[in-house]
View 1 (cartoon, each protein chain N blue to C red):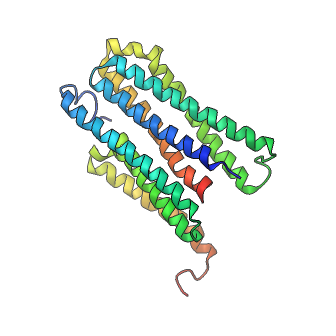
View 2: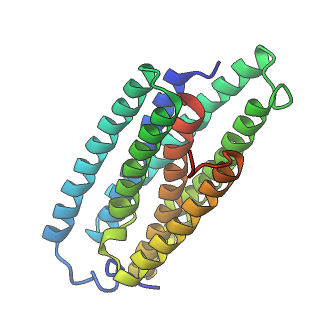
View 3: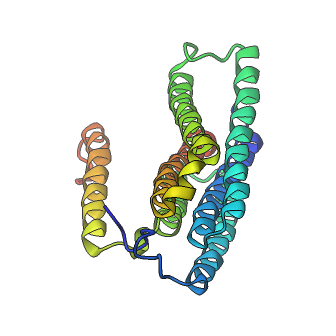
Length: 141
Length: 110
């Protein structure tokens, strides 16, 4: 019932976004601001890709009448992935802030900015971590 | 609040150090991809449920540990941080085991 290939693609997308996130932080440590921008942009795009794929998954479920109210498993599935998706959106908002308006801080206090990006990265990695457990539990078992 | 890898302490750190880190990140990325393929492939074998759950959770734990240790720099943290995390993990495992044990009465006695 659940789409394993799409979810596998989503897993790859999120893991890649984690790599680009840590590379964004590493770019800041190397004082390469433009490279940071590229990697952070990629992270945000990967997050967007994840959400788009999730959108297709959800709409397919709703189309075939698989709702949270249908059975216990679906209720749990939608709750877990829905909450996870909300955290992805939250993380993307923060990342977008640090890509755009927040990046001003780089000029005045690069050390502080780098630390803030690292913390945003910690949240993003945690979102990825949760998905790493959700994926096998919901889709594969 | 600052880990060994805070920007302040690494201000004098050289590009060489970061290069080593970048190589680690790429290695971890490849490992994560491989493990993803492993976990999807194993799921196709339709192993008996307890074994399938164990394998899936083991693979997921390894993947999660890789993300935590290297992307989140947990491996370069002080021992105390590790200890706190290990304690949390132990309690979590106990939390998960409790419902299983209550349902399967006589779990330890056959």
